[in-house]
Length: 311
Image (cartoon, rainbow, N blue to C red):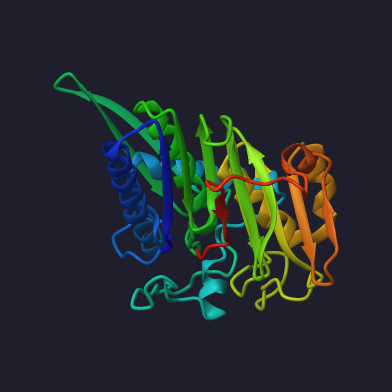
């Protein structure tokens, strides 16, 4: 994932922050394409051979396939070859970390051909989960944004399960909140663009993700130069509020790739969506107004920032 994370816990202690740190490090080492022995890197390198994976990676692969189908292919985790070819081979967090795409990898792989075998066994009275996955040859995955959102979701769930009254986790800007927040039980979240804060949303339990026309945003519907540049150049940023950070990230990608035509779909899903265009105009779904604070509102000092992160 290669990005910074922020954690806030209500009604917890240092042990909860340490739990979050350990879990995020664990997920980073399972999902990052910049770590050679991560599950994602080993799956990419295996090119069709089966690979033993962590249970968390099973959840990630399921989320990738679901996101791809739910967005009619707009969300595509198999465009790693194109991302690297367009110049995004090094981590923006640590440029010394680079990824090599296996020879023969297609610019767009086969999401539907991802296979996962879950094998739960009992050995000496203890339940042991043995999970194996296999990618179709020619396919290479990038956990990218969906990994950030899913990591935030998983860590918030674990913090609340460990006794925290409330928790916020932001991974590279994909943010999840749950439990009792610092603002009368809710969480006030600031939405940023390049010039500063542009809006605030108030959320009790759910996720927020912001995506923009960054250089590695790939449009799977286009050719080798499959980058979202000026196809929707008028649309420069999309912020989505959803039930989870993972789903918000998938839908933010959906609207950035498909443009304004995706807005009706997101409206029907009752998602809060805010679109910002290059000329300064805005478009929102009706559901956005369930979350957005009135312009005159004075958010408390504990406002959480949402920034677009790097994958």
